[in-house]
Length: 343
Image (cartoon, rainbow, N blue to C red; front, top):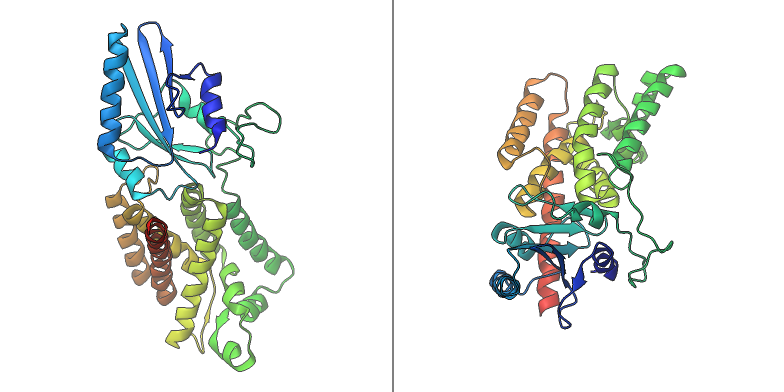
């Protein structure tokens, strides 16, 4: 955890009240006492609860009428550790903080704010040196609004823009059918003439306005949620990985050796599978969507794929599975990394 966050609280009026615990800060306001504990990990839930009880006794004995606690657990990204998620479930007033996004995650069983600290923590921009100072010597505040600079889905918007631009240019220059034929997923020229670039180009081509409209709406809705949750580069890898794996499965099936397939739907179905996997393996909180809602969304997507004529069902289902598996592999990697680190 960067010292800049501690300095931010000190600037807010908090101070370390114990020399041996610099990560425990408190602020006194009349008969109220606010205590904030910050760190990257916890020894145990029981230790935190015991420590809180000790502090309650200490400050009640000093005459304070109310003692309020907040625990902030930091992680380098939003894929939090199991111990941190367990703390959220068992310890009242606990936040998780993704340092790469400068974002507080207040889960539904936790308070959305505490003494105005949510906005304060999200405003801190630590220097890379970790000495707690910012380049300008002041804390920089992010722009207000839901789509702030840090949370804006740059990758999603860029991918959607590329798809729309390619679609429009193919019509403007009068070569839409030729563009589809030259860039579509098509097994024959890929295997006979080595045109493997089609694995990528087919992801950015669409047949007609309805096709691209439906795909881009799904991309913008799902992409914004996932990109905000896991970060820009991981999201890009997830999107491209799902689309590529989906196309490879289509080729492996042999069904598209003499058929053409275009569209971003394989990658978009991958985002649907990824949302479900994030919730299952990382308990990732996707705003507005419960686990039951996510499962219903997956079931509906599969149903719609099989009941709509002229769609690439192989690509849809394989994309869905690919997105789910990519998140699962990230979960396995994290478990193995943690195991090796502890041994």
